[in-house]
Length: 455
Image (cartoon, rainbow, N blue to C red; front, top):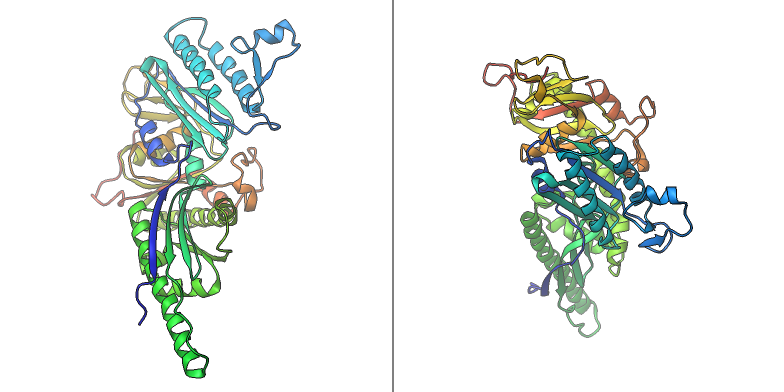
């Protein structure tokens, strides 16, 4: 019987300039109080530079009229998204000027945004900011992956861009092992955030030549591999339980991956989405590159499963709802376990946040619930779906991709309205209004239907 072959276990937290805990940030931002009078500014930027200079370029010989459009800058950013956002923000602020509390708050937000962008780590691929100077709110995130360049001004933060990043690139783990060492790497936003490494003791020493001695040596070597695999499996189980990561990829040579398959606890096996061959000397970047597409495919599969479950539940026991009105109502009631929404859903609407009343289309002339019509403000209902899901605390959000295959990995790959090249899950969800929810319990469990607050 082999003794424990594990010689050393090392845990490491990898330093990074990125904000990796997107889920907690989404919940915190979603819980911010609505601000109809003085709006929030939400900005996302694809922070990848052009060329090789991730800084700002001199304006050079530009016309005076061009300088007036860039009043606080004496340089032009080599990152195209910054120029695009500066243009979008100029247009947005003009709708609130030339004076007033909303104008002053937005102007202060934009000034602070410029200062923050000057100091963003050059390694960042994306930037996300929510600000409202009047309320003392300024949240900035440096991201390890790019996000679409957008700017929004509204009574609540626009969180769908960040939610899509969280949905498309969930944290996952890769266990890379051979007979001598193993490393469990936790990957978030395409960077290794934590790792656990295990080193083994040496193989049993060979004896004199001979058939019996050779068999004894092989038996001892096989038992050593099995013992090392058991040790790796136990450390993997403990680490996954501690972090809550639900996706695991096994990598290595055939001998070790087979031994691990026999040693892994059932709760760990349930998280394994793929087993791949990978050299034990692979770098962190090589590990990420070899596994990202597998995680994206796993996410596509989960989206399809969620849509199928939505269809089945709606037709069976009312443990699900679909469409704008019923989904909003169950979100407000805190009954949603999983929100399922197609990624190109665009719904204009209105809300009275003081009464918790929503409606689709243009704001009404008279208040449909008997309140003060002055409290009604325009909103993007698709953004409100996402915000309410995260404001509820622990609801999951599945954003179903409208495109298929590798194109779904592109955060900007959302077809124009009317495009017929849609994925099967998206087409199925279209038939249900583009949005639905799996519920924590049936809407008729108490014997009464859900009370609607949508007009």
